[in-house]
Length: 564
Image (tube, rainbow, N blue to C red; front, side, top):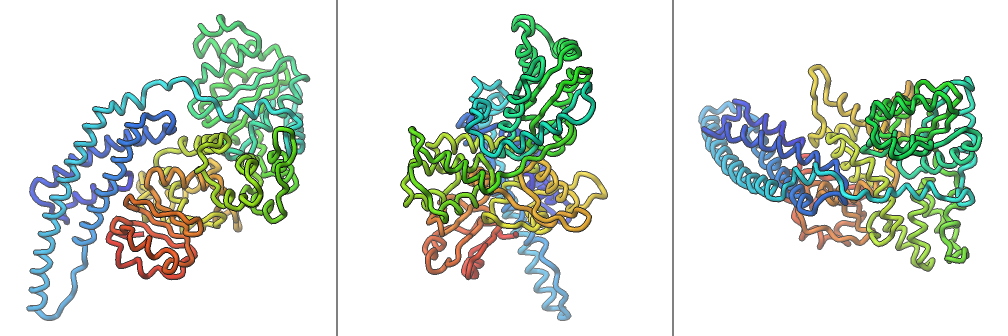
């Protein structure tokens, strides 16, 4: 909807000469859509398991309505903006001018009728919003907290950990540098699933005996800083009854007094913003007893703000194999099947050294005979709802998506159009965002591409995408998305009908709903998939991309509102 509102503003310009009364109708519609857009943004910040089903249905209807409205406005703007032709024949010129006049009048009547119809549908959507009490459902306090899927990382035996010794030694060395009396802080950064919590817990277990006291506390995407401070004090031995009555300022004072006298080892896990860290830092700032702090985060900017940065690296090939084999075992610890070198290569290539990805795929393969493995790892994504590891993986990765500001969400969802392991050109991606209407200039003097570049850099900062090439002077020319992140993004994109992806190699069927953005990944459209494409409506496809397709010319006559 973010791309629709500016277009409605464009429609109000005098040059489009709308019918009497239609300008006020468009203004009213714009105000109503702004209100709906604000609520939709709030819905987008909440994970699906916390949303009521009625709210999900309402959000779906609003998105579809905004797509319809954008199609109508785009079609009108294109028709009304058709260029005037220079014709030397006066008679022919007058004939064409009259023809265009009738056509413009007809187009204005059409959009007037379409806007009235959209306005009627919007009123119905708004009525359901009130009836479903959408606003109160979004803002109401969450129910019983769901189990943090990262919690199991805190209770792994050291013998189960793979490839952790080297990183542990490096973090400990970083903590040992500098003045022994002053507090030392190291931040561990990397995207979800790389093992930040596991590493921090391993360092904590190794160093805690050398300190007077220690504490390991999670913060989370929606932090309750008072709870974090209370948890630290309770773990330090303070009575629960004494701590629960204190406000934020009193909690900070009490913690400051404690750390001034004790040498503490503190792990602050999963920080998402600088403000949360600053409040925690206030409670630790006067520490002069040689305390040490490790903080974990997915966001590079936060990591740099917190302290010296240790950047998580993927596992080595040998460690990937060890972790894979350790997971493909039965209850007695025996390997269920011995994978071939080829099968192992395919699995590890897909995982690209990410422990969470290896664990997830291994859990799917463990119960399957080896002859079924190709089917499983060729369809790896989030379609295996019955598997706990897959569900946990999705939740861990999706935290990064739901924490994105609303203007970045369509940008990352759009990346689902690209194939796996695809090197995405930075400039091409930004221009596609601009063409789609995702990029908005808020300050005079800043161009669209410059703003889009800021969006791109922020996705790198949040470790949603990884840079591939850095040319001279640090200029980034391309990026890549990890397969597990791409699978998560594709799943979210499909749920919101943002992109319809069709890969014939996976023998999938095109959905019956209207496709708005269509991405094809198929070598032989005519021979294998002509029947499906022939029966699929293309009238509302506004964005189209084909990767590795032999001939797509048959599709173009069927597009009606295509613009990217």
